[in-house]
Amino acid sequence: MKKLLSSLILMLSLIFFIGGSQVAFANEGVDEEIGVQAVPSGLKYPGTNVTVKAGDVLYSSKGKNTNLVGHIGIVDDNGSVVHMMTGGMKRQSVANFAKEFTFSVYTPRSTTVGKDAGKQARTMYNNYVSSATYTLATGLHGARTKQYCTKTVWQAYYYGANRNLGGHPLTKVSLPPWQIVDTAYLTHAVSGVKN
Image (cartoon, rainbow, N blue to C red; front, top):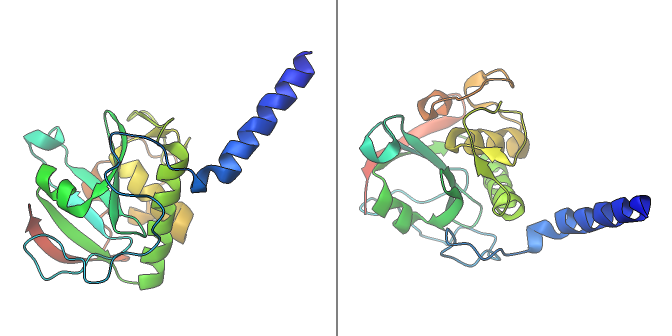
């Protein structure tokens, strides 16, 4: 009986994870439909002429609304921002992210790398929104269900585009956001974005 139950749980888990990228979870962090797979043409960051691109890294510097360490998110391949907060993984429009944070935009030097990282960010959100928990006590290469903002962006680039932002060891724990704004792969586009 135990073996049958274990097999059933394994089979259900595989079905969930294989089909997970096609499932939209009901979550308070979602404010857009998940099914779209392209950044809307002409979408700009609020108050700028800078075009939103998949893989853009949005960095909010140290301040009281970022727990004095900063915050970071990534634009997925449909133009939404994926980021990890203490309350869980969140996905929201650029405009709504800009209502919460004043940030700088770092855009990928390679469009292909950006699209790959953006796609991975969307996949991570779809697969882990209901199970990801916030913790700083986890290595960069560790479990994808244990996240913090920097790790989420780092993993999107590492697993999606084979890029180690900042060149950090995979076991690095509790990495602050400013340490992955890597000029080898990203270029500064604009600062002070706020809605």
